[in-house]
Image 1 (cartoon, rainbow, N blue to C red):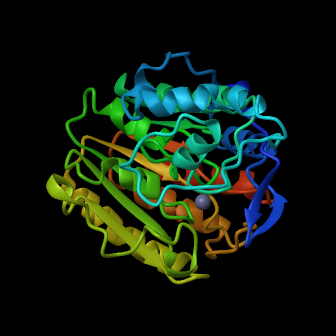
Image 2 (image 1 turned 120 degrees about the vertical axis):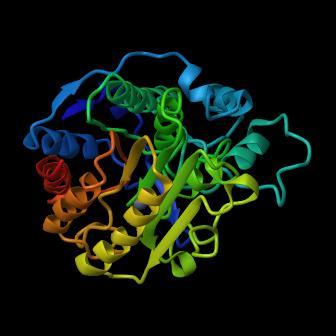
Length: 341
Ligand SMILES: [Zn+2]
């Protein structure tokens, strides 16, 4: 399988985030890239550098106000006397339909959902190249390849149209899906990350041309808490085009694969022309988040089941954090997918 990744994606190096109110080392470390590259190579991928596409494919999903914010906020933030090294918000609007603040502090609160997406000097560049990896993978599929893998880092599925959150800035899976829409009439996004793909859901919530399906740990007691519940089905023309399949904490392979059956049935009924897999490897039993208990072998079965859809497929990397098996889990998923494709 062809894979896409640029070294600029490694520069973003967030230092901290708040976990239960306490500052902790940020888990979205550049070192993840080395493990994922090793896993992709073990699965036979040739790694290619994505093209630099400019803002076009990103602006097809994210509004200019937000892109301007991401590109320039850090410089403005550092002009504030006594400001922190990384941008971390400390105030949020109760609603988002009021006036737009002019100050960097106000805008940080407006555009950042939580403290897990600190912005530093390198963030914009890394996020942009990460998005371009997704666009390149989508283009490879549009050019006739049956599948392609985008090693996206930083990840994207918690990023809404104009809100960063949960280690995410630009929604790579949504950007890939929108790119595929240039030629595909209907696109499905299947999110198998441990955490609900709330940003992706939000972006397409009122649309019927992109089906969003997410399997994840039940948000009733897990991040992102306010989205990912089974009764969120879409709105307006998008009603019936969003499916959430929350799982009990510590669910293992059999429960996950059972939910995946339902997800694949729904995707089949949508009859899409192309598929985006938002591939989180953090449902793994040894992942530091410890939310679900999928095994390394389980990822091969997940990949094989998804390949059974026989759809042109863009695999976009989402979460999955440092543990000994991180690379093996990617190799297992991609190997299972290719063997069954
Ligand atoms: Zn995750």
